[in-house]
Amino acid sequence: MSDGSDSVGTPTGQVDAPVRPTSATIKAPLATPDANLGVHIANRLVEIGCTTCFAVPGDFNLLLLDQLLKHPELECVWCCNELNAGYAADGYARKRGVGCVCVTFCVGGFSALNAVAGAYSEDLPLIVISGGPNSGDHASNRVLHHTTGHNDYGQQLRAFREVTCAQVVIQHIEDAHMLLDSAISEAMLRRKPVYIEVACNLADLTHPSFARPPVPYALATSHTNTASLEAAVEASVEWLGRAVKPVLLAGVRTRPARTRSALLSLAAATRYPVATMPDAKGMFPEDHPQYMGMYWGPVSSPCVCEVVESSDVVLCVGGVWTDYSTAGYSLLLKPEKMIRVDNNRVTLGSGPTFGCIVMADFMEALARRVAPNDTGLVIYKRMALPPTEPPPQGEKEMLRTNVLFKHIQHMLTPTTSLISEVGDSWFNTLKLRLPPGCEYELQMRYGSIGWSVGAVLGYCCAERQSHPDRRVLACIGDGSFQMTAQEVSTMLRYGLDPIIFLINNGGYTIEVEIHDGPYNIIKNWDYTGLVRSFQNGEGKLWTAEVRRGRTW
Image (cartoon, rainbow, N blue to C red; front, side, top):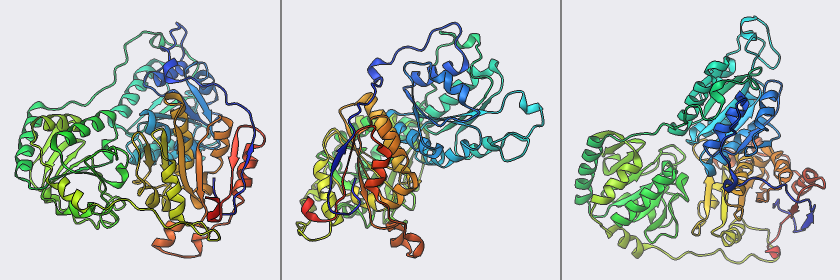
């Protein structure tokens, strides 16, 4: 952790982290004839690969948390507040494919709402579980604590309708099994959060449908229309066959594993040069011989903008076009020159759209038919410049950002995961070259300041379960850190070991670049002292301050 003063490093605390279950130790669901609703929810989470639940206790979810704790393969991580728990579930979902956050009614749910909205924007399956009023309260006309003071208990449900793709309220034990399965299936199919509210008095009730095995659980899947696929591939092959120097552009919706694999197959078959949009960094291997770099309009990697925008056909897979990803809609890329492969559809220029087509199915089918053309790649290699490093840091000179990130570049390895906070860290981490196996995450579409601290917690939990040899690095600005700093204490509590570079530039630098004012200046903290207070003699910690280049 770095906050900008001369370097002083002090290792403190030697308490070993408790042993946590790994993916290799996950067992079958609890098979007991007296399984209750809470245990059944835990079973379902483990079945879909979500073996950590990020939670904050409250009056309405305490009984439910008691039941979740009974499952030996479901770890509950207790967070400092619900917003951070939601961010942690977001980070966990990026690694494991699905995340879960459990909160109490209203005061907890409303606090988590912003994090869930971010997951919705970023296409992340999140299971939001909230305790709810007693099932008998709905007919009582009572005003409950923690609510907004009305006897209408639907305020939280209505709020979550805006940021989830499905919502269920479990008030009767008889339909709990069906409602729960339908919600989870929607989350996994549509890659969006879902909301599950559980009446607080039902969590420990049993029902025959919870005994294993009742009905085998099968997730719904998307299907491709064969005729539509054949027509789309035929039209695309004709388009690409006429192209002189086509380019392959990868967007953020190539995140799923099968889609990434199909993208690699398509790249190999076409031999086109490949660029990624900024929010898709790391979703195509940056050591690949066809990889050019990032396409971000005027902020692009050297020469990439010229190659992409001069191409006569751009095959864009999984792109999401926002003012962020298009550098304020400054791209010169014309839609009529693009083949856009989106979720469930393929569009050729300004012409026909073919629907009911799964993205991976289309890429796999196109790879079998397309003719290779490496003209664009040859042009790029003639233009490309070798990477350079900034001039050396002077001994008395204040540490420069470009020198800091030069050293971060050298720290990246195949067993590293890099997480970038919103703002200034984006622009610096997006320039880094990821070695094979190195992973990268940022929240570009939603851009919630403070997201990364909770996300680091969740990502570390996921890494420990699946790849305990990997190390998480994070680049976080001081303004962002002040919003969610408490969750560093949770990292220490659970023995996690991320490396956090806290870049202290005295305020909201990204906002200064947009529009400066006194509101962009924040109170400076003793950041190393703050983290030592979080540690408080428990857990492992090393923290240092860096001001000048001689430390490096």
